[in-house]
Image (tube, rainbow over all chains, first blue to last red; front, top):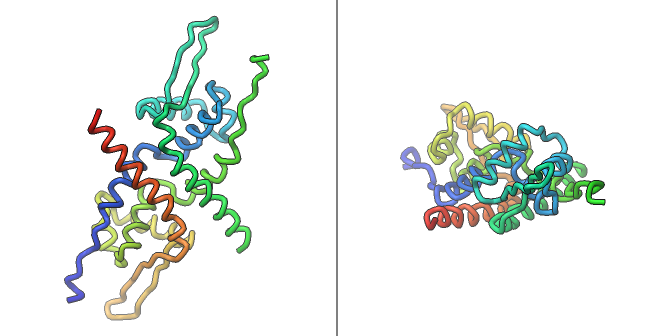
Length: 115
Length: 115
């Protein structure tokens, strides 16, 4: 009987979690959303607020976030032309994930120092 | 005055979120934890429950999860030798993140179909 055991189905949870991971993939997207949400609206400000991100990677990630309608990019016809980024209301729906990760990260760091 | 604007500091949130992302990086770790948590304890069962994962990647990810003490690997001296994986209690602390991601993923899929 035990030999015929088939694997337990976990698709019901794995599938939506993977859908989410496909959108916020990599290590930069959530930090970028956090940075824009606290008020960094210029490319350079976003870059300076996130240690280690290169302009090339930031540009690519911003484009993907725009594609997912999590942020918007506005060109202001000034002299020189200004580009501003803003979090879309849809980005707010990520707040529970961000807070759960913040809590876990704080607890994890504490745990590591304790050990 | 506007020219002297410095970027808004968001390290307080970005840092712990990045700590978390460092542990659950990539697209496989959470699905693997979910699969083991629902009862898949054998390598092949875990692999079959997660579409698209290769044995090589699964082996690497399992080793990393073991390193983070999120899962344990037990060798049972049977004939043939049996290897079992189990979620450690520490993996339970990831539940809020997994559920937040599950909810978001379900909602996101619905949104995409509506549009």
